Length: 374
Ligand SMILES: [Zn+2]
Image 1 (cartoon, protein in one colour):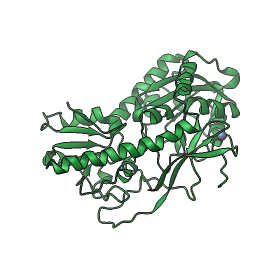
Image 2: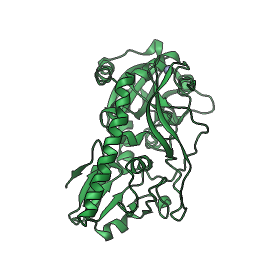
Image 3: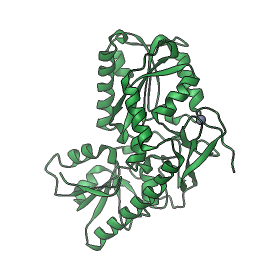
Image 4: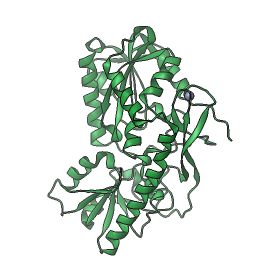
């Protein structure tokens, strides 16, 4: 068997648990006239039996991301609210020196922090508030990333990290969030373990709704941290769901195949009944979902996205589904809208129904395909 070093603790007892086969890269949307097949790479989840970090398996090369996405209104509002809450919960951080480890998505906190009087750490200056909002997942070596964040943090300072949580991924069958370029799938348990190895400890945690269920975790240098009850609550939920257990984790593969088959059947049924189905959203989740579901342009003629950079392109992989402006969906008035950006389904429905809509049904693919009506 291939030997793999854990991306978190560096250990070698790392085992495969979920295999999604060879998948296209999630963010390299080819122009609509680019013929297939697109390049594919193995996409699998592995579990470290020591620190319990769930992570991508060995991948030959890091796959670059194209920053084509537009931040959702949900994401932008969340960044603003988060900064207000942190400064209210930790008033000593008002006007402090801050540093942010950036991310291609999730919404930067910096403008909101500057507006509240904070200044950016210069050079190697240490910061009282270090922020990482959906940044760490893009780093192939999580242990090293924690070391860099600990180094940047001033004594007595606060490190705030937000990341998609493995618990809702697992219990909500969010298999389409597994993708090339997102190297780690974090539980609070694994984050706490790896933080400890790098001189940090978790003090508090909040569950937030971003991307289908995320955690906002507050950490400090180990000597400064005073863990509160919120930490034990999340750890107990994770333990009850078995997300550090390789047998439990492996069941995600079966759940993914089942939902993918059900989506194919549902779209086939709509087609047979003569209903027009179009997609909303071209998120980096869509390639894996449509590929596993074997959905092509025969079942989904096109999808639409707010990001102008994606127009005239198509979803990567075998589906070849083109991406067009949102206005084309409204003009086509489909009977059914497949919401590929299911994590912001409410925002999507509110947007399409703002001027009264046309009576469409909204189909949400996960955890199993289900319909939402306004
Ligand atoms: Zn490990």
